[in-house]
Amino acid sequence: EENGESVYSRVNNLESSPYYRWNMDTLPATVAFPPGFRMIAYSDDAGADAGGETGGNMLVECCDFLKNGEEDCVITGGNPLIFPTTACEGLGIAFAMPTCWDESKGIGTDDPFGHVAYTTDGAVGGPCPSGFNKRIPQVQLFVRIKNYQGGVYQLADGNDKFHVDFMNGWQEGKLLEIMQGCEPSGEEGYNPPCDCNQFLTENTDYAKPLCDEEVRQHMIDEATDVVNVLPRASNSNAGVVPKTWEDDEDPPFVCAESDATMFIKKFEVKIKKKKTTFIPKVVMFVRDDLNTSFEGAEVTIYYEYEKGNGKMKEKSISKITNDEGKVVINLGKIPKGTPVTIELEYITKEGDYVYDGTKNEQNDDGCPVFSSECSVVTCDENSCEY
Image (tube, rainbow, N blue to C red):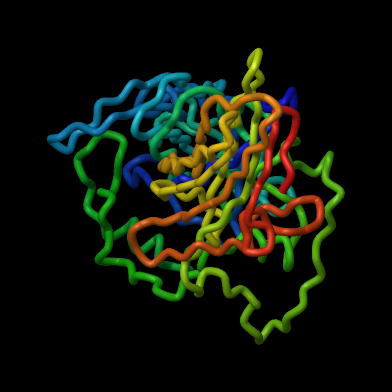
């Protein structure tokens, strides 16, 4: 919360991995997903609280990485989803989907819920409820937040129930080939081992990530990175942007192909008043072209003000952005009634990164802060101008 107003920052340092499990030795028989198959599962669905690695099909673990390559994890349970308040090097959220399918109810086109169910004991190869005549592979989605900071996290929909959506994108026949050709690993609950690369060909022509600005220009014009109200259909006034390219044309997305640049996504000077002095605190969020939090960038600002003896006080301060791309720089005590000017000396990071001030947050006149046109911020104990 800032100045009495809620502020939500999107978590960008995410990784996700899907895992597949199946049991070919039990009835009903396990089949590959048919074309078009889809399903949605929630962590409070009937049967989701049994089986799994920890007595349920959802787990939350906060892990630190040891020097020997192992992990030291604290498991904090399943449904409802509770984010740990303590920090760790990686937070993992894993949720496994149902494995029983009532074929008579279709492939989930109109109802992605009612045609699937968990086994009666929650295990991958456990008994299916009455009427569910087919077994499907279990899909487990594992989401990881790197450099988890602890504190206040929440799902974007404000819910404490985790859910996973699945839409079958397998090339027809490929998953069945893997199921029939992979030897069991011997690990309880897992079949096959996680390295079935002998059946798969790496896709080198995958879609690149998009910049936020391209999403807003070509898809839906709505901020999702740093907002005061969580974006959702009930409070969105943004409409879908009409498609501007033909089906046989490449989409006009160029951000991911260009050189990586850095810019200031959000800028603010907070002022703390004392009896005879005030303390400006510069807060910045640095992003890259994909609007990813830019960790490890060095931000250096220069400020100056006139002291009571007529001499100028000048100083440069450098800080490193954290995993949220955030940097906070305190300027120290300045006498009330004395204007202070603040300039950005540079933002830098090892590698092929370029600072582009033209993309910085804009002032009320549309001028990017700390750009060549608006290079100086001037503050006193009451306000700042830039």
